[in-house]
Image (cartoon, helix red, strand yellow):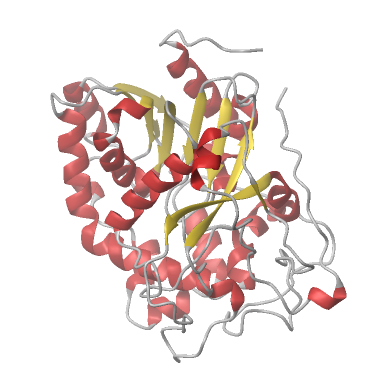
Length: 396
């Protein structure tokens, strides 16, 4: 039975309708305090002093730029439920001049939800399970959210301490504008992941990462092998044929057209999810993915910036990942899970690479690129089985 996190959530009052930025955590909390308390998160998702982030912002609120902006429905939504399960962790310093972020098209100052924290970035994390059990970190792919792991979270939380998070620029985490504290290059993502894992106080952890963020995680892991128990890669870009982004994503890297297309939730969410596998998600689930794009233009600009980076630097990172996983110095037990109905990454060459690198390969015939969406419960069982092979002790 999954242990649900009991987090408070405040319904916005009428007086707070024009305040829709993420609220920072208690400034008195130190990183050392977070590291010492592995049992749970310290920062709340709800706001302070009557100012709350509006998950479902009214049309007139918006952030001043989003082409879609505003409220989609009046009733409760899965976004609300998911947001209640999470808390914010502050990790990775903001590097910049402190200027207010401006949109890259018109140069207009963005509203609160598009501004970075002044000192340390805020990451949206969902925790489940007993903190005394072995820790498992679930890392979503590009472009996606931690929400994609909802089924895996519940499947693992009985026997493990499970944490899923939104990368910077995605979901409910901070979405800094490029050149205003975070430039969305892959080296930054490596160092920011290190900051987050340190802030979470995870000394030993099994890491599961899906899709195009796998090279980032492997580069981090290569420098911190002592922290990892297991590494499980889910449909990662492994071969030379995988270094070119599919047209569905690369379109966001185009000059001007990319900025415009990335503001369309149907292109940024629906098409990127449904074009890479056999997905038939319910509308209520799709709305969770759309929500960041509906309420803020910063989500689209983050997607645009990272798409440009991926298009330029993915090849070098994939090559480095392949060398790392095949090298004699790599000591972390590694498993590759592959959804064979992936329309973005071809299966050709994957089996041969895993055999040559002596990594276990698990095939999922009915899953696409985002395996956790198609076969969440099955993926949870595969993860648990892979971790149990090490004979880890599990607390009741």
